[in-house]
Image (tube, rainbow, N blue to C red; front, side, top):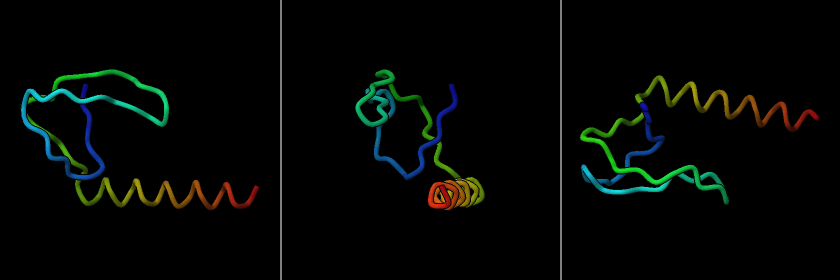
Length: 60
């Protein structure tokens, strides 16, 4: 499983964390040796998709 954080997170190797979306819990895991964050291009693409989704929702 490859997971990238949207924002930089303070987490130590071996620390446990919980994956949640709203009220739903997806799982509890132990952090890996390395933590990945989105690079500038990935962050820009995500922001564009978010803006497009909001614009489409406003049109409905």
